Image (cartoon, rainbow, N blue to C red; front, side, top):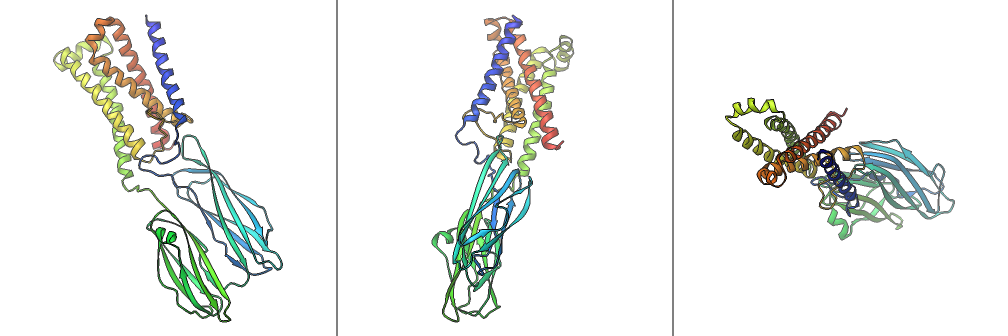
Length: 406
């Protein structure tokens, strides 16, 4: 009988693991996780949009990391078209990093007698944010005019967050007239501009425009005019506004989730002791509680409470806090594609075992009549051991490696 019951328990565990593997086929595995939104790396192109003929120039690129995950296998590749040519490597790599800004420079040369060209910059990296690391690609394409620069901005490209402000200074390289700032409706939806351009500007003089992000999107600030000889010019500044999740309350939720974890685990230990799995403990505990009936009622109440506490712990940390959990349809499981995912799933399996123990206790009289007390006790203790072992491993791993960073 014992051997058959262990076979049944092993089959239950295999079904749970199969459900975890099945969870990997979800339709939206890499979106938001509860209140936290994945923010990709920012690709900021600082290159001037107008360059002098036959003079080489720097194609400057910044890769901005928002934090909260590791970016690996980072590379930037450029391609040029039109009257441009590259004088150094087309691809440059960046060491793995998890925050800050990395800068790269590519040397570009205009061809003799050229008029224009384009530069496409492609950023490729692996985000170790999901349980299955995901490859992302971002592309920025700019147009280059070959000729004299009439008005030079301090920034040719801006990447900013919503509610963030940046100031762009425009400096005249010659005397300019009929200056006007032109934006599209799409641009006005993602940003606001503070400050006006003067109608005319003498050489070496400048003016400022403040850009404030409103919502996620892209836009372009175009400034048009003509020089003193009547030759028209236009300068463009590309703006990308990123939406950042509200993480103001995340720390409080994180603390709450971990407090619930400690209460659940130590409550489980205390519940097992009160359940008196060893016969000599029963007499002593019955005296403490004033009878076996009172002790059993308290033990049942503990089991029900622990199931609720553990579930709240999971909901707070996985759905509200910063954790990136991939939900597999209706399964309460993470993708078991790495050690952390497997450890989280062990906690889920332990929680299911706790619930089954509670159900067994609630229907004890009915189940004992249907089978017998020995079978009921064996399965009850077996489920308790599964819960204790899986939750202990789950707790030790996440405490050491996630909280303490060992």
